[in-house]
Image (cartoon, rainbow over all chains, first blue to last red; front, side):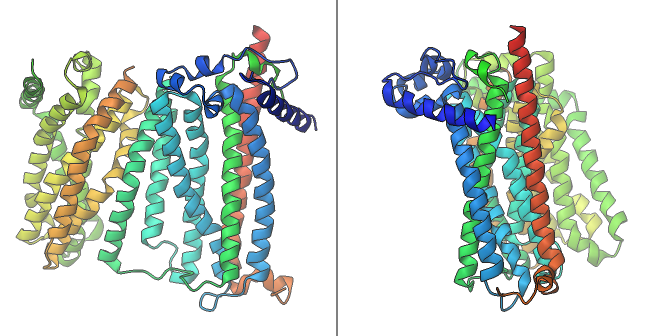
Length: 294
Length: 224
Length: 55
């Protein structure tokens, strides 16, 4: 495939650049040499960022420098995600025993719990990138935030859906106002708000900063919401029985952890893909992008 | 002009506007009345049933009515240009926003809280429950307006502001909804509502400390 | 193999609908996301190539 060849080309270029040049230049995706190494000052464009510009990590605050790196991470994560999914599902379905109380239906846990965790983790990651973007004005941070949001919302939705399907045979109803399901539902609302707000602005820069602010406000509120829902739950119905519980067989736990890492890798891969697409979209007029074709 | 004078001026301006345009606070009140009267048609008129849903219905009704006041925060000023005065003032923007939120809270929350015990009569709620509910509304509506200030500041220049404000604000009012209605429920069950009142007050103070600053940042972003 | 037959595997002790309903929807969501990613990338590169053509 032409694309694979091109990407490995990028990677080797990036490597050689990092190794040889003390002030490294941006690798061009399709072998046209390199453009001027001006990205730290031009692209980061913020006084506070200037101060740190000597540090290596600021190199990747530049979309041009991050583009090939994101491609590498994406490929690695696809590989990890596919491999771990196969391993996790194999352990989960062919090695883990039947649950003593719930029978076979507990096997939903291998996707329900990882999805719920990812929904939470992705929201925190979004808030982290948003804070970074607001503090340093780095465009790439906002792009990371936008790239994570749809997958986070999807994870919350998957967690709700699987929770409902699991609840039906376990509790007798599709929906229980259980503390964890309720919190995930509210988290889903927060994702919806973020995505809708980011889309509401014609001016992309304004949308970036506005949605970053709302991500931060949400992140500050998430612990309070979780606590209050817990409080409400004990007030109204007493502690509910959790499927799975603490008495999980170790093979079940192994399968769940493997699946969690698989989900993690999937989310990173998808986010990296989206960041690359956004870089292409937003840096349309940048010279270095001239060679990127697909 | 010192900060206190500026804040007082902003506060007085808002109160004067509310005194002149009575519909600004009377419309949410009417909305509140109508919402409260709708639920019995849906669930039936037995007083035992009504008592159980009454707290939730009245409380949610009050919050939705307060949502109607949010466009009053920045949207109208953005249209007639007086928002520029707020933005170019040498005083800290967060303090001026706080003064404005205080005025709007007073003009919206007070009528809604006063009406709450009256509308609670629809649901056969005992007097002590109704009074507790009024106190909850008095704490919850300013919290909602504080949180709403962030959202409406962000959406001053955006498309589809009104619905999006609701999407952004309502999930963040869930803690105050839980504690506010929880306090009234505790009274209904004959237990002490102290913990719920304390938690709701804490959430209000938390919003009071953070929201004006966040709303000021939001206003700077959206009017950039 | 802990299953007596593939039939037993697919029926999941009579709870097949709930288990496969969960995994099925996850699979659909992932495929939909991948298609959306592809479409967005295609759109982006298309406009990119056009805009560079203009210059």
